[in-house]
Image (tube, rainbow, N blue to C red; front, top):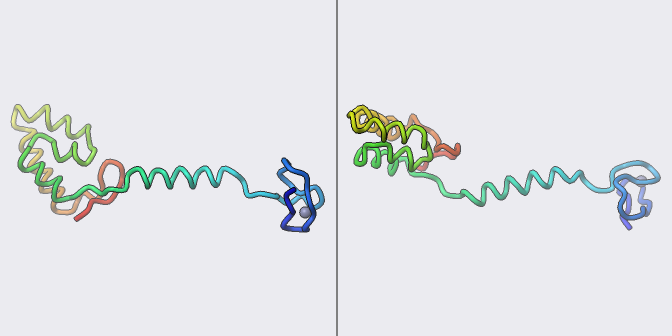
Amino acid sequence: MPQCKQCGAQNIDGIANCEYCGSPLAPPKPVFVEQNQMTQTVATFPEQKSRLVAALLQFFLPFGIGRFYLGYVGIGVCQLLTASIYIGLLWSWADGVYIISGNLKTDAQGRPLKD
Ligand SMILES: [Zn+2]
């Protein structure tokens, strides 16, 4: 028997609005669903990627490994494929400088990089 918060009347189960004053008996459910999804997303990916690790990977494994580490798979594949003709090597090293200088703010999921 849900009680109306507005007028205090007792209502029968299973109705959304008070029979007497019409005010909602319970908060809308979609709000809770969204909150739960956000909580789950945060809980599933709590770790931040390290800017230093990403840059070192680009310097010492110069074929896009730092980009793979950050989740930028598309750029990583491009650097990997072009590494055999040296473009990918130069690109990876330049990318390492770009990452370590702080110009790259987030990983592919939009999480801020750890300094
Ligand atoms: Zn009421």
